Image (cartoon, rainbow, N blue to C red; front, side, top):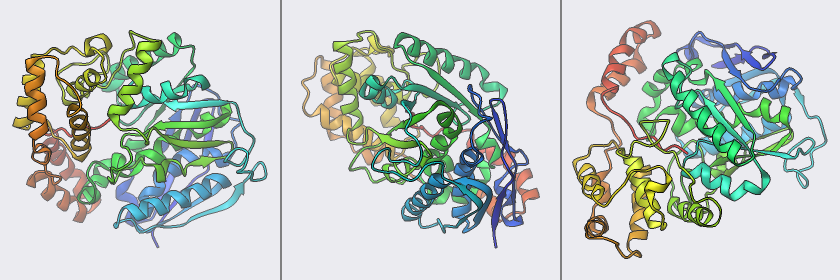
Length: 445
């Protein structure tokens, strides 16, 4: 029987580490590195059952994809129940998910269950937290919950990797989020983990890319993973509410790792998580940000660029899309971090028609959302009118890349799925080289 066994997590100051052992059939999905994560608050007094949450949040989806059981010495009882709910949601979403059980020698339940008060087990704290990048979605969530003065939480380990090559990007993100927090009287929390180098993410992609629109973490793991990563820090700081901004909205039925049926199910002692903003489209979130800008913060800056972490390049698909959305919300993009003029409409149309960006169904829905607003908007210039008229009649399905990646990628992944791990390790550099020639636009928050 396939299984994954967690050794007891070790907390040393602000750092958590845990070794994972698997049966032979699952070894290919894990590297030799122990799972590790560091916080900027001490976690040594956090109960062992809560310390297990971050690693369980990352290994359980791999187990469920293989029908494997997971074994742990101690687990927070509230989180154990949450995992069952998340498992059911992911298994309902994906046919390839087989499920599996969690077995623990001990469960901890510090306080009697009282969902009527806190929605969680344990004593209610007074803090809230918000996963924050400064993009449209997380900025909307800040605007919505600013009266709570949420702690802004930024994570290194996914889009910004732990590799030294990403040190500058991480420093830029920390600086930008710290400045935003200082300007708004907020606290920050910075979390660094090797969660995607602890997992053999390329091997997961080789096996499961054929079933998902994006990569493993975006399509399956990141809702549970990012929220679970915050558990020891949230427990130590007494956070009762933890928000993650929605990427999609009601009416979009895409298979995605962060959705209400996943994120709203995540909880542990003292903390409940929330998939925030799902009741508004991306354009409606920009409308709410525009209201806030006009009323309180005329110089608010957004950061959504796919190519830069310090400022926006103004030339990638997401920069153009955000700039157009800001215009439709009645704002001048140049006032909020996006160099954009009427002449850019021609370049934007040309890039979309030529397929210069690898777009997925996410972007198709977002451009459709923009098109709905365009139909209600009077253009302010001939260039804008020409672009609006083109967009209204454009076949958005033709602008979106086929979900299947190029044949060479499919062949390499098929080979990796069927190869022994030692052979795969030799094959992967060729796959990585081929893959690097293409870039999937990743919707960030």
